[in-house]
Length: 299
Image 1 (cartoon, helix red, strand yellow):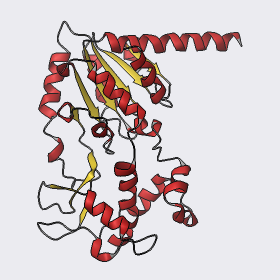
Image 2: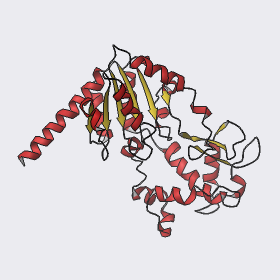
Image 3: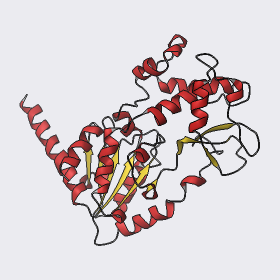
Image 4: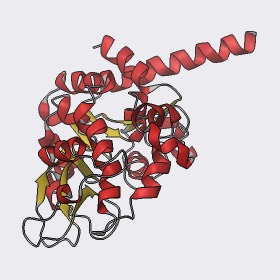
């Protein structure tokens, strides 16, 4: 019991020191991964979401949204498109258009709003639009994985993306049965007539041009944030090992190359850091919603 109390005390102290490091930084780079939205309620491995949103698929043996995505993502031809959209139109509607602002994103926005605009930046792999709903300045966000709110041509025939709110609403309202949308509601490219698909990074046909505009600003932020007289803190939230090359490994490399930088990694299940930067890092195994709520209370 005494060992547990001592461990809890040390953990609480480390958590407090991590928050103080964030608040005392001259520059803050926030990395946002799937764990942030999972903390806010959209945990794709949680069977309760299938029970709530897609109970009709339970008889197929489906347990999670990850299972459903695996079933439907490859069904991208004219014949199977009604079945594809029978799932995906409703998934996008739930995650992008029906979802309220999650408190964790509101707290991220509060942290950023408390700082000068040129002293923070966000790198996110999430596609659910919560940062936009929270009002975070998207000129200060690099989010190159796509966006649930737009479609792209399946080929693609251009770098254009298309706002999909009206198309999503029409498909969901016009379901043929509980599994399929009506064929005439399947979205098609206004340029070439081929299928439209969600604009999500999954293969070499992904249209990334709409997301590259903030990359020069991101690079300029990193240049200024790693100057000799700065104290950069990289606040990494909910980034695991599904795609560590996007944020997790680059953040560690930034700390490795810049002795004044500090990494605050908040991850409920995978908070570990590389041993060579452990002395300049905080490994926090905590629920991100709780961590951010307590952090903004210290502002």
